[in-house]
Length: 259
Image 1 (cartoon, rainbow, N blue to C red):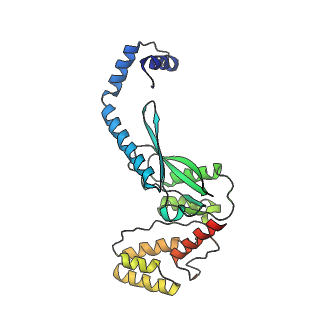
Image 2: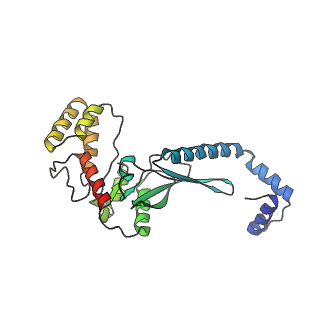
């Protein structure tokens, strides 16, 4: 209930048909919130600080929603700094910042189109599952305006996301999954693979990677190859396109900015 006790009395009467005095309403509210009030306030303050930090960061946009004066939900949009800041045609989804399962957060999809931001919201309330992402993507398809030209779909590299995307025919061949780990144990080997200027150099770099760190190399190769569609006509790693993976991204970003 919001407002002063008198306003709350009116709301209780309208909603539930109950007759209460202002003092009774105030006492009831105090008892109802007695055990959880401090915890809720701490949670609200923590989330509010988080929102302020996100908005001050420059790469994100966030808004804290309240209902009846208490925390309701946190809306936030995560922007991959190097791509969505430059490209006007990027759809980005990410659920890695969901802190714990009990809190309802809205995961936002963002479409930057000629500096105009189109935001879609979908609830992921339990886990980052295939049905949760499928709901998110279907929502995108249902309310998104017609998209002309090439658009990059960025997402987590999780199997749930990949499975959900693969079920959308119009997105399957344009999927670009970018979720590189920055703090790899063998960072130099990773950088050598990502900066390879030819398929031959890439194979040599990955072979050195496999020799020294086979498990990490397998993960990195999977991520590099998942960049492969990178949207036609940029080519793919499998088709022996000589362009290095990072340059493919840069090329698409430049193309999106000029079209």
